[in-house]
Figure (tube, rainbow, N blue to C red):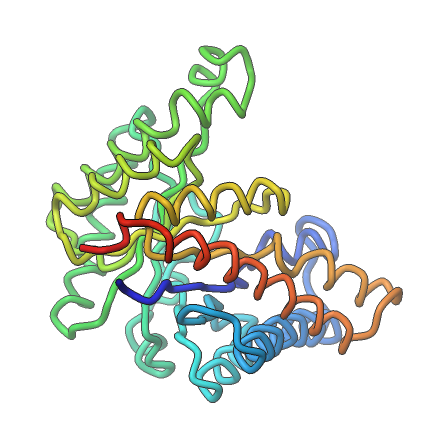
Length: 302
């Protein structure tokens, strides 16, 4: 049985600065320092969870733009480090830096992450351009034996929501699984080798198992992680347990674990040290939920 990969994600950039300071705000130096310290505090929470004995292979997913110090903190503590290549919140995959390879090599992370918004029922030209860029990035990584994590998100179209009477939960149940499988197929069809898939929560364990099998049919050594999507702690716990029982290899969850402690620290109702302690506890809980189920699941054995 493989040791579950339990990643605390703090690679949000535009979402985070909008949430803290309002959409479109040009950050002052003081605000920039705050965002950087926020990410460092989350990394310190991950390290504290590791030192307290949280189960699994612990890791941090963090960006260079705001999280360079957090990345170094994670590496110094021996956590697995994943770093994004993509510029966030782009409809079509765009690297954050023109010389993204040099930036990646400067940090030498354990995983390079690429997020794509890939709803296969949207404009074909944009999807094909995205797949071409992903293939180029993946080829560079593969040639240098650098593992690739691909995150797939499928925002619903208006037509898809209309088919679900505007119910996002129904979209997740009835349409998202097939869209995820179709997106996986399109990524694989252009020759991209994916070491780790980072995928949205599925309606139940059986659907998680189908998605895992879909990925492993192309490469039995690939690993699937479930993401958190800033869902409630109760929903994330359900996804983790279902994914673990279905043979997923771990998770990459972020805001569910750290957003509330960070908000309370920044609004003055808690100290930074308290925020770090709470982040560590929340993260440890996620690790406990996933690994407890994974250790009981025969699907973990290959």
